[in-house]
Length: 382
Image (tube, rainbow, N blue to C red; front, side, top):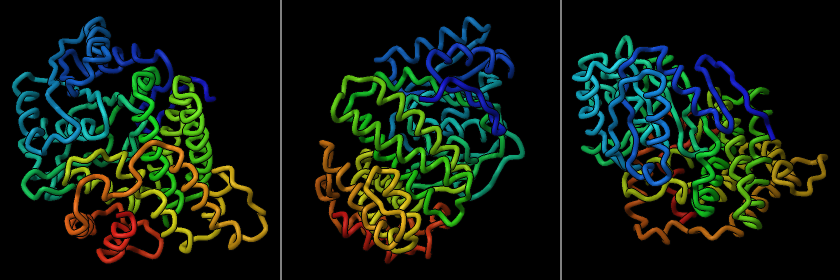
């Protein structure tokens, strides 16, 4: 497994076990008044209290907004931004899952101006933002190195992916011990979500030698972590291994991006408040089938990373093994395998597929993808 390390890309990324204390000086470097944006469920693991203690010991005067949930609507952004302005906050810190971190990113963007979340969703941008530091509570953080945020548009009841000011994210502190508090079922679902992002990034038309190397390793590590999690769910090392693979995936997605499965998972989660990781896991085998014919060499690479027996001679022969490897993996997990299991109708899902067809993250799907292809993908997964 990788050792603890720090890289700058250009944000400072601190990764490893017991690295959370480094949050204090990182935040203090931007001023003494901070606002921690988080979700109340993290009180249960003591994450909020531990984070606040570190910040206060560093000389920070902190306020906490802990009323977010994974499916909080976009209107919360304006509310929290008003709090940040009134308290003369100098640095925003986000602690939580992907949706909470996206809310915090948006707050950092509009709190330094008079813009609203509605303005961001319309494509308007500020010239500057408040410094923002991210502390993910899970190993899923696909947007870590992208200038984007995922927002649930409460008016249109759909997902939006908004652009944020470049370099808004000044630092990311990935404390791997946080992953130890995740249930094995949640951790395995998050692994499938990350695996979907890694596979789509690998096939993306924006991929490169750099991203391919990272994602081949990430896919291999995610598969290994999942297998260990199935056999030995109490073994905390599989969560650390997944966290390492999640970081590799995020590094690669900085230059590639997600695809049809990611767009649908974001959209279905926002529209129906269903767990995104469950949706991603259900879509994964069907996305793999869709992608195999688009790039057989890449499919053969996925098969090899999944530990399937490949000849290395004929990509046409090896490519289908990627689908087999994904299905074998998903079949060993005690998770929903069909969208119909989530108590939502096919008509509702088809409408959602039509909604997400305008998301920019679909730009790297090989061969392109539109509403019809997205609806067919949903139908096969139903």
